Every structure is written in C-alpha cells, then in structure tokens.
Image (tube, rainbow, N blue to C red; front, side, top):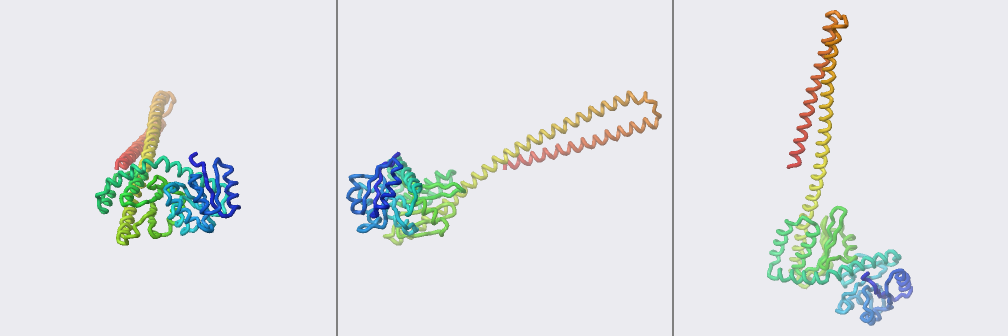
Length: 375
C-alpha cells in the first residue's frame, strides 16, 4: 500500500482524537498538529504522504497553510485533504484552487474517511507510476506544438479525432490538445452509465470528480477567475489556469475551448452510436440465423408430411384396387368410392400447392433479411 504516513492538523483536540481512533484500524503512521504554523514547522521532518487539514483555525486557516505547502518545492507533492464543517461549491473550488486534492465535510463517519483515504491512496499510486510518462509526454507535446498557431492546433485536432473510434483514445487526444495551449485540464466523459475521467497527470482528484457531479446539470459555462468549467451533455471540462492576466487571450481561449468541447462531444456521440449500431447488427445477425434455422426445420417437417401423405394415398389406392372387386359392390357403389378417393387426393394436392407457397414466402423473407444485413 503506497499510503502509510498521515499528518492530521486541527486546533480542536476532540477532532484529532476522532481521526486517531479511525486511523488506528488502518496500518497508518499518524502524527498530529494543533495549528498551521506547527504543521509547517514539522512537515518537512515528518514528510507525510497525506495531510488532513482543518479549514477554520486561528493564526493561519487551512487555505493559507495549503498555499504555503504547495509553494514549497519540498512539500508541494504532499496530498492535502481539507476537513471542514462546510462543503459548498465555492469552498470546494477555493480548496482546489490552493492545491488540495480532496475535501471531506464534518461530521464524517469511519467508513467515509476510510473510503476517502483509499481513493487518495489510489491517486498516490497512479501519480507515482505516471510521473515520468507525464514529464516525457509534456516535453514532446510542447516541442511538437511550439510553432503551431492556435487555429492550426484546432484544425489538426478536428481532423485527427475523425479517425478515433474509442472513448479512451478520444479523452487522451482532448487532454493533449488542451495541453498544447498550456492549459491544465480535467475531463469527464459520460457514456450511458459509464463515466470516464481524464487529467494531465492521468487521474482526476476526488474533489474534481465531486465538482463534475455537482455542476454537470447547472448550465453550459461556469467561470471562477482563472478557472472555467464547460458542460455538455456527454462531456464536462474543467480548466485550471485560464490566462486571466490577458483579457483578449482569455476570451479567445474560452471560445476555442467551447468549440473544441463541442466538436469532441459530436465525435463521442458518433463513437457511441457506431458501437450501438454494431451491437444491433450483431443481434440482427443472431436473429436471422435463428429464423433461418426455424424455417429450415419447418420446411423439413412439411416435406416429411407430404411424403407420408403420398405413401398413405398410394397404399390406399393399392388396397382398394385389390379389395373392391371382391366386395360384391355394384357399379354405382364402386364409382362412388373411387370418386371420394379422387376428391380426397385432389384436396391433398391443393394442400401441397399451399405448402409450396409457404416455402416461397419463407425464401423471400430470408432474402429480405440477407439484403437488410448487407445494407
């Protein structure tokens, strides 16, 4: 397990006791601090992997402590989870803006904190495994896009995604496109009941996932100073570093981002539709195969019945030809019997014609199914 060392920071001893009680059940090494300055004084010596940081504290609040941690190159990599009695969208955005990776609202239960730490452990594992890949990919992308114009990048992206048939590849292509504009982004794809997340470092932090869930139905565009959230039906995009120092560039990049997400939404719809049609085509093939099998079985049964009828009538004719002359019947009686036999045989012949019509109808249905499958 990657996560082993935790630092809890809270000015209320009771809250620290609760956290300590919960973490006793897990295999974590825990130290505590009762203020922001104490946290900053001890953090480099202890070097935890996760800091559970209270927001409301005297001297320094949690936001100020987090800013200081993230500004220090020696502690910037430490995962910070805010612990607060309030959990509004604005406060979560503020927490994320100063560098926090997660947010938990008081009062919380044992299972909720354990689940949060489990998620942060996964974030830590994936960050460690992807760190070198991200550095290499970032360097390559910047070099490749150095001499491209903004519109050139967009045109190139639109042309390339037309050949993508997988949502995961599409999400990575969108991340790469936005990175070429020096934009740090987080993305959510919603494909029916399946939700996928993409980020520059390969994983979205839990606080971003919660923001996507809270705001996905709250309008097309949300702006928070240098951050912007764009919502479409299947895609949500969060940009963390919009160029707010340059209003013209800010507006231009915002328009670019909205257009790029719109185009990506259409391609994602095309991918989903194609998969649905392929699935329907496979089901139709299975139905056609079943119908073909049933038709053949029914035709075989009709053929067997026809052959049996022919045998019965032939045997009946032979028996009557042999027996009637010995029965002492007069001519009218013999004529009557032969006439009734002929009528019965004729009715059977009519039924045979009906069977042929049924066979012809079945053949036409199979031909129509074949044409439908080929179209």
